[in-house]
Length: 88
Image 1 (tube, rainbow, N blue to C red):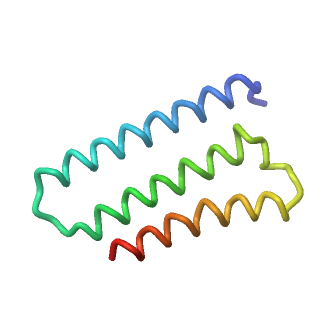
Image 2 (cartoon, rainbow, N blue to C red):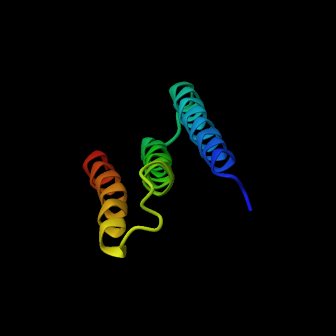
């Protein structure tokens, strides 16, 4: 079984990778003439993935009552969806 600190380290690394990916996506789309909807969708997906990771690992809601975990996960999914729809 993985130790707690190893789990946090892997989660921290995943967050760093996602943050770096969002910067890379921003740099790529800054110089490309591709669809801005694709850019927004990719960035919002990264935001949702990072939010899910923070909720489950760092807020420790993975084993919390389903009601509270689902409310937090819905927030992480609904807000990026609303932002995406605004920009589209």
